[in-house]
Length: 215
Ligand code: ATP
Ligand code: MG
Image: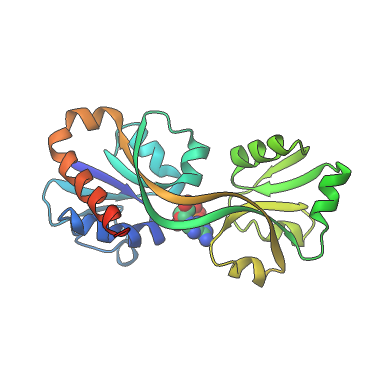
């Protein structure tokens, strides 16, 4: 059996064409079922539906052979036990620093003010501000980061931005780009050896599909 870990939403949707290229078609959509294990047209391939941030963990411990995870999630996880052979170039967005409209971020940084930063991405935030030599107090949140500056919990947030619509709707502006994010294929290191014959053609199909998008 080959088990593929995916999260619902944009990653699932954008992974479908890659699976199709490998001849894999899920028998149900995660949105229309409460099942967490979803079969496919291939009797020896199943999908498991997990939280985006849990994908690396399932693959690391071999509960899934392969998975798809955002670079944001992989950096926070650390990547232990995982091969990351392919950038799938899906679920693209940017990790940014954002503040409430009118907050003088540049000025605060120049003055050497200690900033309060709310984020789910504490590892990347720590590294970013350390590399700038800015002292920060990090406040760990699990979602709805946009709220934090509006209610005085933080001076700034570190969050993913794609269209900017959510920032705009909450009177926030992006002030710094940390990195571009896309999703990568992750593979359990021993599965790649033990199930090589079954996995390699899938990886080749994913590779070819990603490459064909540049043609
Ligand atoms: P959950 O919604 O389960 O709390 P999540 O918000 O991390 O977790 P998704 O919203 O499904 O999960 O996002 C999954 C991945 O999609 C992210 O880890 C990131 O790599 C990518 N992504 C692309 N654009 C965005 C965006 N605008 N906001 C959040 N994630 C995005
Ligand atoms: Mg989400």
